[in-house]
Length: 282
Image (cartoon, rainbow, N blue to C red; front, side):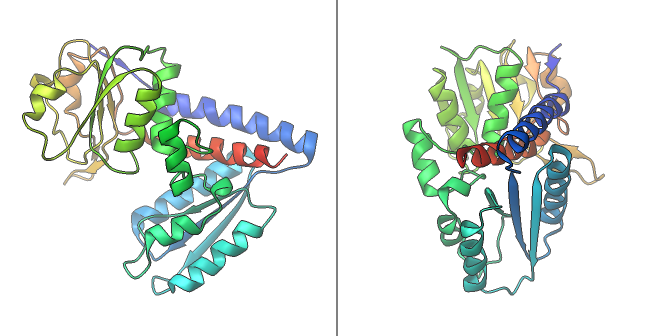
């Protein structure tokens, strides 16, 4: 039976470390890390995420600002807010909550954020830096996955890693991070031929496809390390991952649960990125 990787505990450890570092930064340089979160529209999931980010900022001693804008906000109005935040010396991190309404270009908005304040790690400058191995910031969820792996003491060098999902937010960046740690990486997607055969090769499996219980026990090998990034709401209201947890856990050596695995790490990494952005200004 697999060891369950406790994302709640590891995320709490990271927030404690960030709080201590933020306190030292304030005492030493008089700087309080500042995060601005911009929400356009009333997407319920986005509102929950923004609330959690504000709560995390309060816990670690950050300045937190929220900009809640109506769904019909113009692209130019949003760009104007970003330009002001780019120039605001009290704000070190800018996060525009996605998805944006259809009339606003996500690419244009992300590109308008100062790369030194891009704590989401989505700006083309930081994406390019991730490819070459020198980003200012790494996207929070992939960075959180790496922290889970490192803090659990899992060795990546020479391991075969399979990533199921090729999104810009998780799949592609986690593949690059694994590659940087000397894993051999395969990225799978909806057009991969004989997906189960590819997954069975994995020493480390990253499931980030968004289909509940898609990965079954007969698709993984004994001793696999499973990181389940999927968050799917079932008809009964409960959350489930992309992996059939109970049956896969019986074969795995390590596995993350849903909820309580990767999820808490995303906001912890956002706090860490914001602290690093503030430290860069020193």
